[in-house]
Image (cartoon, rainbow over all chains, first blue to last red; front, top):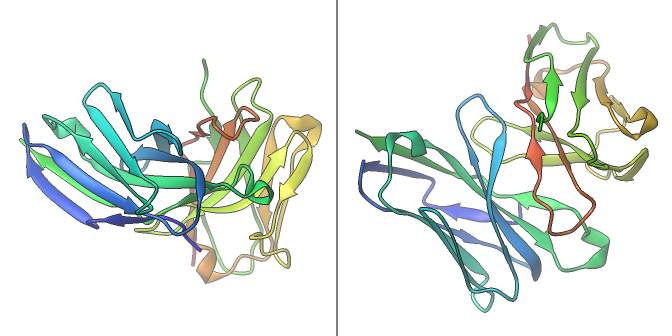
Length: 114
Length: 114
């Protein structure tokens, strides 16, 4: 079963616009991670946010985490055609018996047109 | 650093045939994962190794799937016999042994069972 669920399933924007996608999860987490996957390739880690953090930045990426709502958002600012990819959130549960078990959502497919 | 290497990139087999996938993780990463990714879905964990030990194989269909990680480095995942429903991308990933360590993925093996 998948822990995280991304919303929307697909997003189409033009270069220069911002892209926002959301992730909701069900159980208490240790951390939440965002990954990007280009077509036909493996996943690439973008950013990790721990449960005691509320916001994190990396370049044009901004991630927020609201543990009370069990949700996270990923914002890509000033999008580029190269940002076209699928974006996945993944969670590591707080329970020790789930240590290391990263559970992925179904992803948001982002298309950035020039 | 060299990334996670998987081979082959593509494999087409007839049902009931055996198939094997190979993974070489990043040097120094003692945690290795095999994920399966169906079209339009996020990766789902099949098995996780800490060095040579399989510490989470609860999602591995043990009647037909097997995996090994000899000497705690390279790993192979085998399916025998393959079924039509096994068509998917099989992803290998590795990480340091830490709950907050990101996963590094290979480009996967796309399996088509006909």
